[in-house]
Image (cartoon, rainbow, N blue to C red; front, side, top):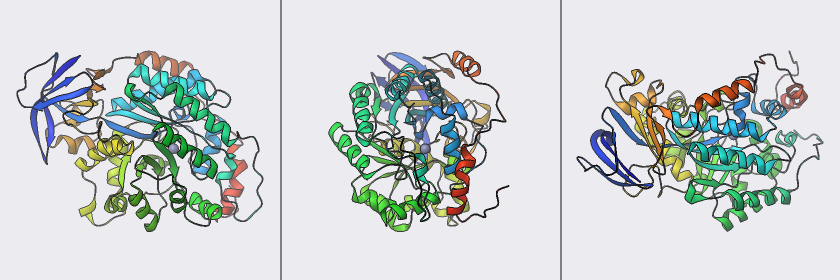
Length: 470
Ligand SMILES: [Zn+2]
């Protein structure tokens, strides 16, 4: 199977040039002006070609709860999230399809799904997500979200004796599950990979981290976790380890060039150095951090320290969409208000590189995808430069990142296979998806649960907030 994209605009240094791009099977065969057409011809004039972006951190099943959780910090928000999490793998399938579709329609060709597992149907959840990603055709890194501590252990004790639920799986059972998932679903050649993905230091024992490291080494798997998303987690790390979370993760050997860490909001300078030394990747989720009031990650400091940074949407209950272009926009301009030296501000071209090559680097695949280069995988996206939101003609990448692009992705390919054609998703019916999402949900703006109030008093006391609850 081969095809040729003709007369297409690509970035060239600080400028652009018009080329033909030949693709053979799953790879880019040649890029040059006036190349002959091999296979099918795709007319690329008035379009911009970029390598696909990576949605480097999300939780697909949160789609079922987007728009509904009230404005609360993570530690309270998550109690509400878990209370209403979908319990049917058929729902997990639909939300994974939805996540893949929204990612593709906003320039992503790869998704990292830190997948919340349905208790008692863990493998069925992974199977549902895998089937969804295969049917849409997006490249997927499925990262089963695992933990071996009760949710309440994620809040610092503040020195008090706190009793946690004992209704949690054993460390060994969790590791066995990941191993089975690897054996059943890890197929790198087919664009589906399993990652080891402890949820984070707040809910995982050292034994669980050690088991993940062992599986990562044995099966050649990437590693993923949340890291210091909130101030509370920074306090918790000191309580648990007597040192910083990053220092501890380094000591137990979790950090590496194949480790990507979501959020990284509350790191100090020494911790930033450690991420640079270990060549770990930071996944920036700016919208989630704003939505949950987690803080602003020191992204410009990471970049100056030489830490690789990529972008994620995070789950749809803390964003509340999977618009990767929006995450890239906010994630790059957000820092202009925290760092006054504008010479370090993220330019649109840098943002595009972070989203593509930065994403691939964080998945230890910079040699495979993330740039427009001969020999690389054909994970490619065409943007329609005649879309109203990308007009008039100024700087296409500048407008793509800083503007508000609407339905601008005209064609996309993953592994050389077409996934979007003429602005439409190719391999699944989006109308069918919309019907099912509509039918299987209901308006519930006044949904109430006791989940938040149960945790609230302790949270407020540990965080030094006044006792009065209105
Ligand atoms: Zn997350």
